[in-house]
Image (cartoon, rainbow, N blue to C red):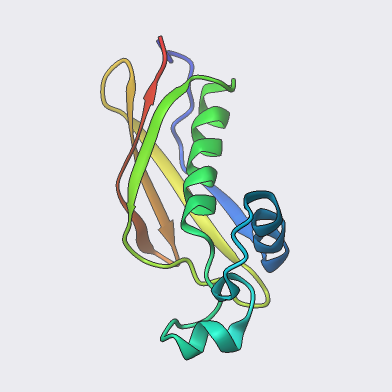
Length: 125
């Protein structure tokens, strides 16, 4: 199947402008994703990325590794740690391991900490 795929890790920059754009596209305008004071008032270390935005970056990684879009039949993960996005932005690193012809195990980290648990994608034939 994905014989020519490149499963080397890639790093993606996340900025607060990305969070605003994602909120506009998704309709999720929870202030913990844009307002430092609100995020801290509920016990978070700062503004955090939307969990689904983080998972979308993992899906982007799979598309880029395969060199084509539309192959993901299923993607999922547990949101195990928030991705804190300071004013200067942050970096998310995604890597993959082909488990069989159709399953990719994903590793998603920020600042050396795993932020998605049990992350995987299943490809269409």
